[in-house]
Structure formats: structure tokens, C-alpha cells
Image (cartoon, rainbow, N blue to C red; front, side, top):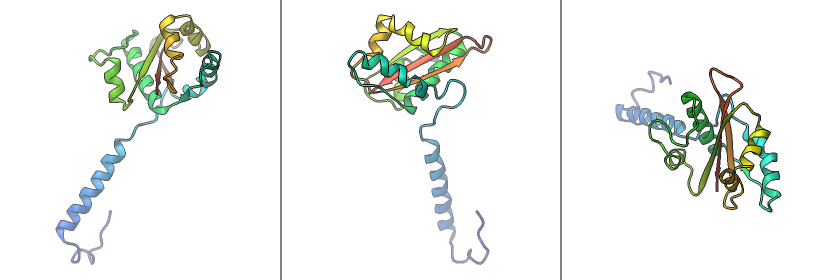
Length: 168
């Protein structure tokens, strides 16, 4: 920002400090918005919409809508698991599922399915549909949104850590 020297006499120091403070607040506010996932495994929610829709409609339930906020939470968990090379719903720094959802701004009922393996998305949903708990999460009538993400293992690019977050 440049200020001409002819404008300085009419602007007092207090006005300049207020203007600088407002500019700083605007910058902080811009940083607090939910970020859209980037990087490997981000954006796979849209490719899973058809599969999840088929699963739910065959059970007489409405389809789920992809959600960037839930995908961010899923990508965060997939990244954590890949960095630790193990599946877990709790992070190494003690964040359980509920606290992670709260930190990501997810309110209300939510559930999480996780997986690790050398398989594609179709096989992933097949595995989850043959697991009572995972199937129950995907067919929960209270859920209307979802986010799916994966992160590849750093040593074995064929190995993926998957996370699916479902919410209202």
C-alpha cells in the first residue's frame, strides 16, 4: 500500500493504525476458512458418488452428497495413517474421531470407515459392504453427506490408506 505524502497531513497516525489493523484482521479472517483438500487422494469423493448412490438406493435410501469439509477430514485421517503406516481411528497425539470432527467443524452425527490395502475404489466398497460395521455406517439413514480420500504409502505406492467420513 502506498500513501502519497500529500495525503499524510490529512490522515493522522490513529487513522493509519486503524487501517493497518483492519487490513490485518481481513487477512486473518481469510485464513480461517475451510480449505479444499489438495494433494494425492483429494477429490475422490466425486468419483465415489455413483458407487455410494447405488449402495444406498438398493437399500431404499437416498444418495449421499460429496462434501468438501468431510473430504478434508477424511484426507487428514488418511494422511495421518499413511505417515504412521498403520490404520487407526485415533491419532498419535490422542485425537479421537469425535475431537477430529469438532476440529474440522463437523457438527452432528458422523461416522468413519478406514482401510489399508493395495486395491482400487471398487474393491474398497466391496470390502466395506461385507463388513457389518462398515456397511451399517454407509447405510445409516441419518447421513446425507460424505467425504472420501486416500493417501499412498511413501514406500509402496500401490498401498493406500483410505478414509470415508459420513455426516448429516
